[in-house]
Image 1 (spheres, one colour):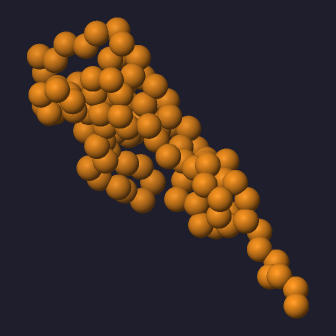
Image 2 (cartoon, rainbow, N blue to C red; image 1 turned 90 degrees about the horizontal axis):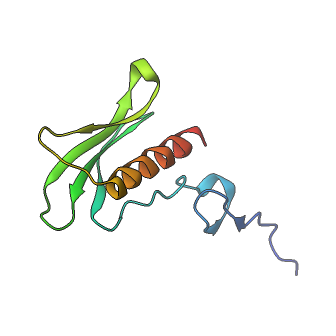
Image 3 (cartoon, helix red, strand yellow; image 1 turned 45 degrees about the vertical axis):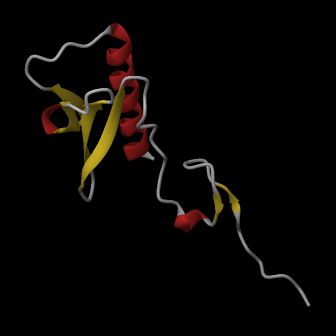
Length: 103
């Protein structure tokens, strides 16, 4: 008896072992030291995330597709203040969202 010919491999997107057509895409890091990103809308080609302060659970901005620039952008809420570290985390998340969309 021979074993079935399975094409199971470690996925370059999500890191899990499965067949190529079973990947749900890259896994985005959504938890950072002071902020987190919550997926609130999944569209056919793009997604929308809320940026939330982990300590106060306050909504501080949105990451969504900005058509004129053809990329994800961060839209902060009025009267929000960000440290350099938080801005880096937002930038890292937006860059990862762009990379996930292109893959």
